[in-house]
Length: 228
Image (cartoon, rainbow, N blue to C red):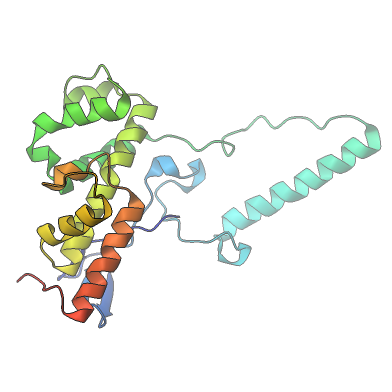
């Protein structure tokens, strides 16, 4: 699972966790992030995937299912060796491909549009969407929500997320957005970064991680000041 950024808030909410990280002076409550449902196997919808690939860290049901599948596979191999016949194919193939949950994907995209400020600047949405999806036929945000294909939505999500995460780390460290954009300009010397919108298409999750490191180091050294 790739690194995710969360928003830290002052008041406790249902399901939130408390953090008091003295090195960066980050203090407050945060909600454990969840993967979008379309990125989860069908039987894990709505659950947060925190377990590693270590069987000891997997949910009990998931481990039992995988263990059972492994045993069945060994059994099928044995049948094939002894009889020379292929075992019957499984009729249920739902675990072989992750299911795409359109409503969940659209909900996350809507959240990203709001966080990045695109929701307040709708004139930028369609040009960005067309550039990402290579001239989609969608002509409005409602068209995107109603008619965009799975591939188009995945591509749009991938472009929105790094900028969304940049805003979150900026807010979490309580620094000015202009400072974060200054770091982005250092990382992208061939792109003119004039505003947050300049980051779309060019900014990646790795850039966001580097910006977070810059902010943390400069706060510790006193080269960067938090905003009130």
